[in-house]
Amino acid sequence: MENEAILIESQAGEKTIKKKKMPLANQIVIGMVLGIIFGYFFPSYGVAIKPIGDVFLRMIKMIIVPLIFSGLILGIAGVGDFKKMGRLGIKAIIWFELATTVALLYGLILGNVVQPGIGVSAGPAGDISAVAQYTQQKVDILQTFIDIVPTNAIEAMGKGNLLQIVFFSCFLGVAIANIGEKGKIMVNIASSLMEAMFKVTNYVMKLTPFAVFAFMAFTIGKYGLSMIIPLGKILLTLYGGLLAFIVTVLLVACTLCHINFFQIIRIFRQPIILAFTTSSSEAAMPVVMKNLEKFGVPKHIVNFVIPTGYTFNMDGGTLYYCIGVLFIAQVYGIELDLATQLLIFITLMITSKGIAGVYGAAMVVLTGTIAAFNLPVEGLALLMGIDRFMDMGRTVTNLMGNIIATLVVARWEKELPDAVIQSGYAKSYD
Image: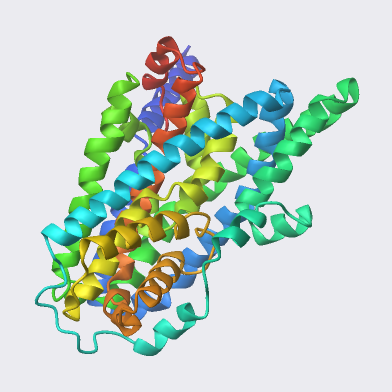
């Protein structure tokens, strides 16, 4: 009896310990705060530990390709309806275009009303030579769409080209669905691979607080908080615009779809914090996909909308482009009339699509647009000094935009009933 009592007490103790375990989202916040403090007081060491974060991002990237590939095959082969996928794609593109157009419009309005470049010195505030690497990269929108079709599927996977992987996986999924019994082997393999990738994700995410600590220590150690002060106006303008977009577009979209926006924030708080601290949407992708499926969104919708949105639905980035172009014009005292600004608006609508996979995507788009309208390219050196801080906000908005886009498309397709949503709120996502 005594041994049984001890055993019961021991089991109760273990349960108590499990209940008291700190959620990963809280661990990430602690890592972020400690990283800021460490980077501020020990800047050289803060910069030196960045490889810890880099290793984490590489581990995340190794998960993404097999996760998307297996998920799409599993989702599409299960649906077996290419027309349905086509309809899904059209609805996703309609939402992407609507959201990014509104984001650009917000950037244009804020850039004119707040005028963040007025009063900022055009003198050197960064490494002007660093701008040169972006002037060599051109945005060819026609070639971007041609490149969606891979010439080599294995090469596309090796390079992590999400759109090419989505294109190939969709075709392969439909083919598997149409070969009958023989295709079940591939479906089972895809199912096992996807489950394995989610398990790997769980292992990797345990390292998140250390990676976040390293990234924040690096950011503060290298750039310092003092860098924010001279360009604080554009930083506040951008974050104000991002917040306005989230409230007036994403929150309203959730309300119209009868989805509790604040519950969605709670459910996805871990990937949101991760995206903010690492400035990488990719770092949060596996967790976002897993949580969306757990919430009740069908696999084929999650595995199609999220990878496509990562290239075509960069809401935070598109809002920033308009502000950035107007900022540089204002710094150098160049007046842009309404016709020119509308032309810039249209140009950015086109050039911002499909550029997410390019190194330094935001700078590439800005460089191309600034050069096309004969604005001083060297003005980018001003923005590069605080780009890391701006990128943190842009990345969170991009991530939230794609989460809401997936939910909107799922509701539009009538594949996310009210009962599923309500049960999804009650689940634990830590």
